[in-house]
Image (cartoon, rainbow, N blue to C red; front, side, top):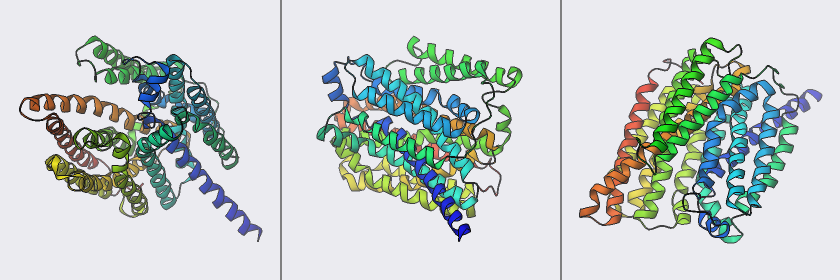
Length: 471
């Protein structure tokens, strides 16, 4: 009887850990998009300037992506439980500050702090899954659920932001995180009790400074490309500085660091190297799907932001269902068959999106192809995350979690920086001989064709994985 009770308690704690990781990932990704719909209300009440308002979004994204490598290494050194609870506390506290903000500077500072909290959280959630779920089927299910939670968080942003802003106030977009964060902290203290507490080694200060500053500068420069040309000082300056800092980071990690923040030996694991390369490419796929189809719905079909979010909901539901299916299939099929199937969906779905006439309506022009693309995302994203973090020593789980998240986020930033100007240039070419909506549609068509090309590139890179690799 005692043995049965012990097994039941362990099973309950294990699935509580998965719920904790999924809820934390959902909250982190949700906050990247939930404020978008609330921006007009925030601008009106706090008096943001046109150039200052985007930093309500960019302040979060910049520190989130820039600090993830550091957050992942800190999780390995200080312990996953400590980093997860500290990240939750910072995230909730900065959400409270954002919700109570009385000036633009306070809200932007709160969003920057939120991004740091998210950078502590995201790698820790991956590390917890990687170390607590070691059996093949359980690990695959956990990665499927974690990926689905992030996907739903990204898609729920527009709907939740619109509903909260309309029904309550823009301040509750932030304040809602406070009770949720408090509940997750309690869950973390209970479910992660007795887990490994870290190694208490000294942090690689040179690597931490050069790696974090290099990533932040590079991402900042890429963000600026939306408003300035690639050869302009606001873009080229940070990008060049970031690349130089990253070169210094790699040299320091390879030759001088006694305990490197990013052990380069991990890239000898083929799944780590190839998986992260595919995640970098996948970031552009995700941007093309969720960001540009939202613009298509609003700017071409005339939907509101809330209606656009609802219009993408069927694809989000499909993604969740397929991610769970991929989790069940992964231990049996291995990585490559799922990735190739997903890439086939990308080529088909984006090709359909690029060719469908805008005046054919939502069902034919958007719903059909986005459901196919969502199947592809459901098959590939959890599979790539599992591949990029497999076969890693337990003591490096947080580091690899930070690297995988950074690759995906950086791929999205780079993808947006490349795809948005391409769409704008194509729309400008078409502007003289067609309506504004038709010109924009032509720009989005080019983006979708480029995304289909990214799908082909991921398929080709997947052949570098071991032939019978299983996550």
